[in-house]
Image (tube, rainbow, N blue to C red; front, side, top):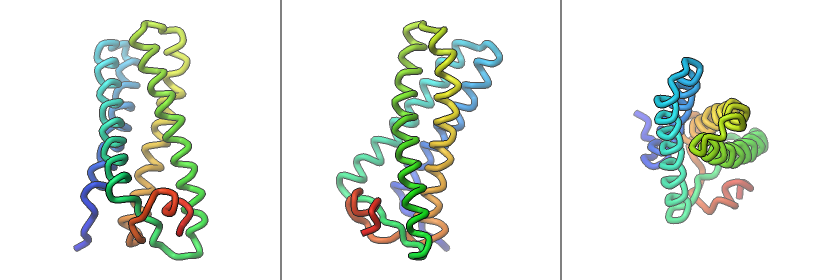
Amino acid sequence: MVSLPILPTISTSFIVLSGITVAIGWMQIKQKKREAHKKTMTLAAIFALVFFIIYAIRTMFIGNTSFGGPANIKIYYTIFLVFHITLATVGAVLGAISLFSGYKNKLSFHRKLGPVTSIVWFFTSITGIAVYLLLYVFYHGGQTTSMIKAILGH
């Protein structure tokens, strides 16, 4: 039986929940269920925030796991990881702006930004799951080390 690391598994679960709730929120607004949409998108943001808190605490106190797969695909994993980190950062900023504009009833702006934010967040969720699978399921994780060393493959 494969033993999965507890903190990365929990934090990745919150990203999955965040992606699912964004999808539900998108369906709700298409059905003109504004209050349900507002609550669901707030919940999606909370799930994303819980992920980030777990990730940040783990990074500070334990470190990050470097890629433990074959050396010949490490460069592809690293490029993919940088893409994921960039998406996550852009998605978090867009998410904060989308939430703020929705709460402030700047709905014309919110209607334009919301779909873009949702698509970016779906890709963030999917690539986050892929990173988890590559680090802990498909391959055995490498050393646990600082974030910079993990990204650079040292």
